[in-house]
Each structure stands twice: as C-alpha cells, then as structure tokens.
Image (tube, rainbow, N blue to C red):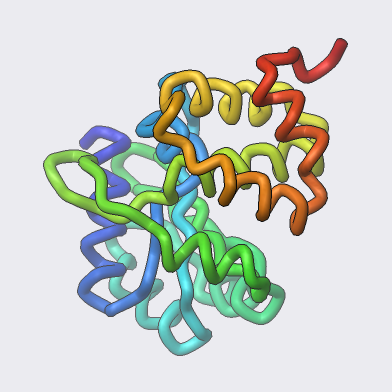
Length: 187
C-alpha cells in the first residue's frame, strides 16, 4: 500500500463517519507547489470526543491508534496520530483550532486527486499561511521553502487579498512579504 492509499483509507473512514476533514501539510503543499518527500501526512479534522472514539474504533485492526490520545487531543485542541500497521506510515490527525482562520480554512477546502479518490485539501492560500505559521513557530526553513514553492507554482492564481488579510490577522505580514519576494528564510 502506498502512502497515498493509506491516507485514502483514513479519508474513507472519516467520510463514512461524517467527520469534516482536509489534507493539509506536506501533501497539500505537494498538490499546490513543489513536491518533496515526507515521512507522514497531516489531516485536519473537526471532531468532538465521541467522534474521535468512533474513528479510533473504526481504524483498529489496520492502524495503531490510542483512544486515550485521541480524547486528549480533542480536549487540548492538539493532534494525535494513527500508524498504518502494514507500512508503518504515520498520519497526524490535527484537531481544528478554535479560531476564525481555522474555521475559514476548513470552509474553503477544495477537492483534489489522491490515490484515485477525490479528497478535500487545504487551498493553496491556506497552505501558504499554515506553512508560514509553522516556519515562524519552529524556525523552519523547510516550511518556509514549501510556502515559497506554492507561490512560484501557483503564480497569478493566488488570491493575494485573502493572503494579506489573514497574514495580518496571524502576525505573518513580514514573513509573507519576504516569501513573496522570493527571499531566503535566513539571510
């Protein structure tokens, strides 16, 4: 089973349970920008405790998943992971944050291809913002480079008004401006 097929399997279960989700992180960046290898996948989900318990039970057998970790992730608005038993591939299930940007990001998700399925992905703009946020939080050149790569590939298709509005709200204005100019993360 490929990484994409493993993600597809989790997405199928999320859809069966009616859990709003979107593929984010490196897989969204690969869709919108310059592809690179990754060791895991990120799926943002909007779920309460009862839904993550149902999700954990539905994935048992194919995946290692801790019901306790899933419950704690919901309480703390963090993430928990599931690990595909046959391949060892890890998927981080990120509980949607309680903030306006996260609500908007999930609302704007769009369909894209993955392992022969049409699944929900974070948009190019929202992936840029999230990558810049992670770059700032973790001082990560790789996250920054992913954001720049999306800008280069998407070019004129990018909604700059949307990006600038949310960059201001998220405290990313300077980082977005540098990325837009194609500057390196560190000078």
